[in-house]
Length: 190
Image 1 (cartoon, rainbow, N blue to C red):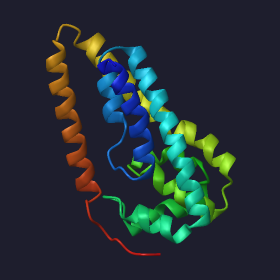
Image 2 (tube, rainbow, N blue to C red):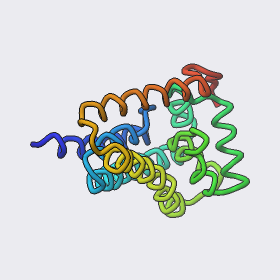
Image 3 (cartoon, rainbow, N blue to C red):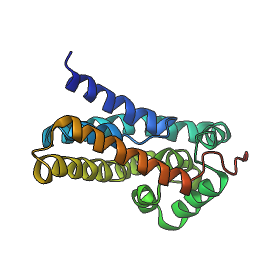
């Protein structure tokens, strides 16, 4: 199996993992694959979306039938605290699923919306349909950005340099993210 194919499988698994328990977004692998071409970035985005929909569906149903356990589980994920979960619940109550579509812009994990959507009366089909733009828009935009930089802005750079720049960018992104959303915050049970 080629490295690119393994990367695609990883994109699916990463999409699933981040929708359930993992705290690093699949955009990391998506952008790496997008360095190899637009089609690779698109394919990775679609596979990460499929994984996210599967994982998000599981979290939705867990939140529906075992609300407290699911809630505590999500609180255990790094950088998710009680304050963030309250913001998610308020956002879902006041803005409906539009809040979930905007969540990635605020660094709020999808899994938070998945477990709280049933609590505020959002049905599964509505949740699933809204999950598509909530996940795919950012996936494809980061893929497009990585591809455009690699192929259009810096086409003469060797791939090894592109990998180094990619690594540095993601390290900086997560330094900033964990400064804004501390690793261990206001963890409380609900």
